Image 1 (spheres, helix red, strand yellow):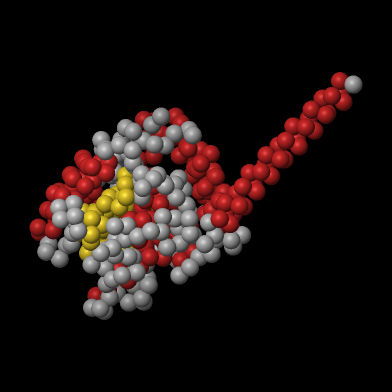
Image 2 (cartoon, rainbow, N blue to C red):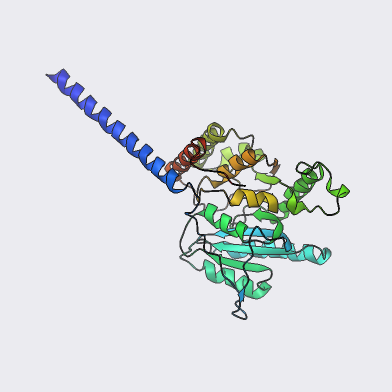
Length: 337
């Protein structure tokens, strides 16, 4: 009798486990189908408003020709206390460089991802100070995720090269020159056009397919010694899952400091579907799919208090990695362009 009861309990647990697994897989399949056409993003064009004149500024698109040399896209979610420091450092650098080189033109695009604090006010203060020609703000209305904020900024930027960087200023903005120099070096080797830029005066860097990935891999040993244990656990476990999912040769996919040429950004950000935790991994996957050369470059990085990554992030990361793997491997997610 006792044995029968135990076996019955085991059967019940087994059936429940199967049902739960089936429910998760079913939900994942449904969500994958829902994203198959890439229509679940914030597709309404942003309205760039000049806070000084209250006039609306025409909205550019990634398919338009470049009007600036570089665009810097800063996603911001409840960053009222950290955004100003990052913008001060960034704009001081950009102004100094523009003063030395008249051909150096820039824009900073702040994407407010539905902040509930004073992030919007801080961002528009900088538009007033530096004018809408140099600093612009996109409001997503509600929180969609860092990946969606970056996608939106990339799609409506004007640069020949485009840099994403975090609002907390964890990476020094001057390190963009490391990524920029590597992109120029790869472009000159003619990966896309079979000739060097120097041999074709009509060729612009915007037309070459290259991505430069900022990396903290060189700081890993130090990070393991100083970081909280759960962040080390997340980092190590995530690296294993990334290798299984995309087979990437990139050691650090999650550094929020990445640069793309306009041509590369056009292919990547019109295809990307993930909005939050794993969009960086999807970018690497798409680079491999499009055969876009990726260069991983060590950058100066320091951990800033207030990180939004915690233990609750694990299931979200696994969920998005599962969606991506199922979507692309099954062919449900089509790649365009």
